[in-house]
Length: 231
Ligand code: SAH
Image 1 (spheres, rainbow, N blue to C red):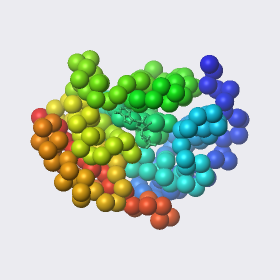
Image 2: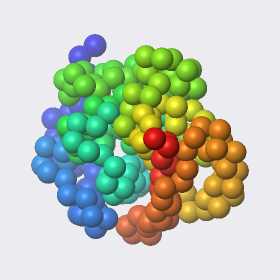
Image 3: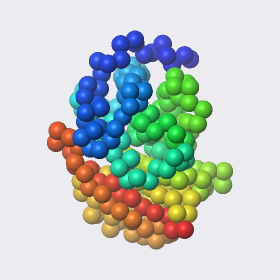
């Protein structure tokens, strides 16, 4: 399957304003990154006709709620050069694919339990020719028990996947001691934080930061829950 055929030539008529809205939250995109995001979004839209990848299809909504939202994980400052990152429950590739496009130095593993989404992500990886990105069809809790993958990541990210206690249980074992999980949540996290206390203790982790932010154009409030696996 040559993923390239799915991407029409014109590249600038989608994700209008992407660069400006990213700048508004403090993220600079270079031209290659922005072009990549437009090509990727076209692939998502084309594939979305055949399979359920996303309910968000309006252009401004896509810019704000998929791309800017995904890239806010960079504001944590946790992604050192060449870091190994796992996106748990990546779906159509959020936040992992925008993250890789913004930061080509990152090595990324995209994990999802749904095979058709993983197949789609393989065409995306092929399109960009990435050798340091993998799409893995697995349940995160199985990977967490696999000695090949457990403890090998610097950072785990998870957006809209499950309650915080589950995300902690599945993701903390994937990161190395001293590594981090960034759970991307909506505005209200107090109950989830309380509900995750046991899981955090069991996994030998603690909440290192709770960062609240607002997407541009009042597209919503978000919370980045940063969890650190104790060294
Ligand atoms: N992170 C994406 C997708 C969210 S939908 C986004 O923000 O757009 C949740 C995704 O998590 C689905 O694609 C589902 O297949 C996946 N998922 C749910 N439980 C999972 C698990 N235990 N292991 C791996 N993937 C899981």
